[in-house]
Image 1 (spheres, rainbow, N blue to C red):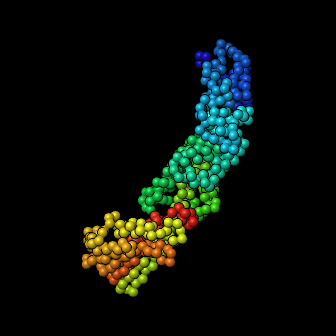
Image 2 (cartoon, one colour):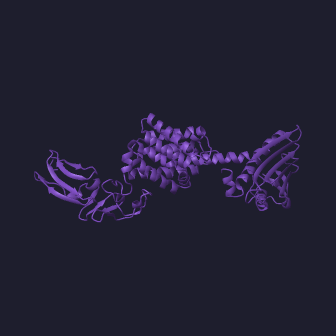
Image 3 (cartoon, one colour):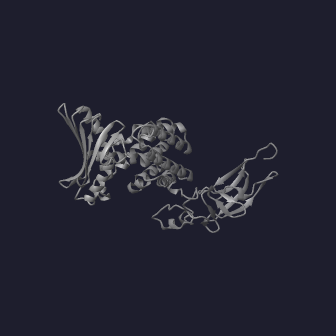
Length: 458
């Protein structure tokens, strides 16, 4: 700029994006550059236009569009510093880009030692694959979530999800920015899934708070990807609200996780497109949400269904008396670890927590529950059985509740039986309501070991 007059320079690049020439606004050549195969720059001509010389060559965007560091003959590639004279990065690459290519294990090499075919826009991730796939690159980013073992590993904690999100986002976008957005989204959705696990209230799984957290994260992700907050907010929120798990099911094994991710990506991308956003942005965000959050919830829901299927409930009444039975199958003796020792552990646990609204062991003797309901608690540890007998003044007197842990035909059971002669229908309903969760919890907590879990598909 001279006085109030502005002058413009135009940078001309080659196939790799390196600046090879600089012209002024009238097309006059002001500088010309050459590069060797590894990016070392040579300035072969500098010109003057009027009274204003061009800026030093080292301050310009140079090899593959990156910035030279003046006087040091090194190139700032954002993620790392590259020395074109040595043809090596000055910092180690924390990522293995192509595990099947041995060149990828040289942590200081530049683009697999193939600088005429690849560029490294971020200092970490090479871009040829992204360019080759074009519009299909985002789909490959989502497809990476389909790898069964890695996907389950990524959903275990925030750091795993962030690492996997970084990889998927980098492939989808071909840039460090996209990789960082992927890492942030992956970590956020994993933490949302870990936090919203309550049965009611703000933290209810699938509730308003859960949907709102998804929507907000989707909106922020959309902005970071260059879109609008509203597009991501609506896409992620609506996709969570309709609940892909309800549409597809919570089945485990096979390719069910991948089917749910695919469905979420299609729904999220479609909603994003309808609301004016990009299909790819909505698909990637929804895919992340399902992979790091929804599939974990699907596994938990399916697990609960299988646990509940192992718990049977029956009630009878003749109008004057009642009997309710809640029976939970723990394991079979043919399974490793299903033995007397496990039975003792089950009884010890349920005996200390056999009254739902107190965490204290009642011990042998009389206790006053909730301040006005006296019961006598009697323990028979050799039989793995305890009995709570209501006393005069108790709401459900007379009545008994028997907790027992026993083997029958090779199966280990925990059973609660309630009997009495007052308010029979109400007593049955209240008894099942109070004690069924405890039986389900015992079945859940005392599966004999990991072999048992695997054998039953958990």
